[in-house]
Length: 429
Image 1 (cartoon, rainbow, N blue to C red):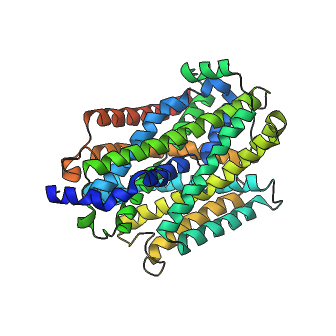
Image 2 (tube, one colour):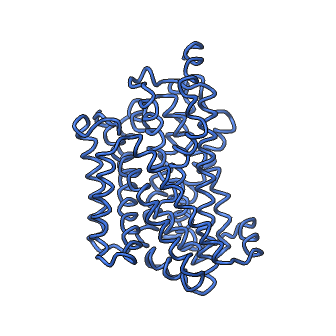
Image 3 (cartoon, one colour):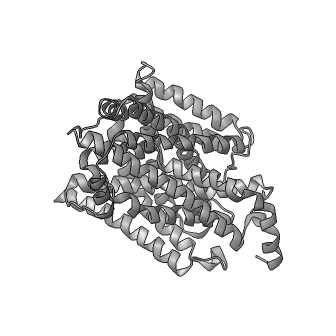
């Protein structure tokens, strides 16, 4: 990228500033706290109490590494994640990675739809599978008929519903001495239940769909700025990357705080009262009400339903981006359905597969936790490729990772692999 080009780009993007941080960063952070994550965190808090709180600050730098490296790849290469993999890696690497990500995304989208429907079922007494279908149709209408800018702005406001969990935690009136101990002193157990929850938390916190969405969202932002060709999108200035780091950090801190307060609210109520077996998200909300008041229960419900409307489209659209990039289909939320038919058909297909999962009678809460486990196995190889790509000058030019970012990226990759391996070992022991 020439010096002249570098100097010209910031002016075109300067209006992104703080409002952009409340766009892409907040959307990615909120999508990370999808109903699957909420179910996993609530289950962990109910089963293990405040002793599990330390996982929130420990996963924060990992979350930052995953999302920022994905954003950086999209900004500098001008490509979405799987287009970059297709262009730089052989098919034997590409297709297994794609299959793992699609399975993880689809299962999690289906589990999220079930979690949303189970929560909504408390207010609307219709069968959960049919509520899933109604929710799916509403989401598809937004994705197919709405513009990228409209979708981004709606998602931005939906993200704020997660603040409900901060309120729910305070209504729970936790013991702050226990809270401080659980936050600062890691408690690790080498049993299958603990390792399953750890892998589920890491998987749902560092989900593969975030990487795909973030890289493609960066490309969509470039298209919105008028850079429709790949040669126009390639490259990023130091100022743009610094802004992206700040945006990502804001979003991940927001996401991590929500994770912390979900664990805290259920630890201070459900675990303390011995109510450790949560079958649905609705169960968690209902159980909170007599212990922490009706307000806490309804806040919990609002969070599940609201963020689901943000997270499910991120997963299904992310999966559609991945498939479209592999097969060379036109793929952009700026395109109308008639201009990118295969891309929009893929969005509809992945959404309806998620709906059909719920007609098979799956337990929503267990599906949410196991969706996190599936993500825990599909994310490590994808993150490995992201770290490798952002370290290659052939792809990134002079914007390859710094030493500290490489250390953080490799440490995150190693931690995810280790957690997944630990769970596998526990199955045989």
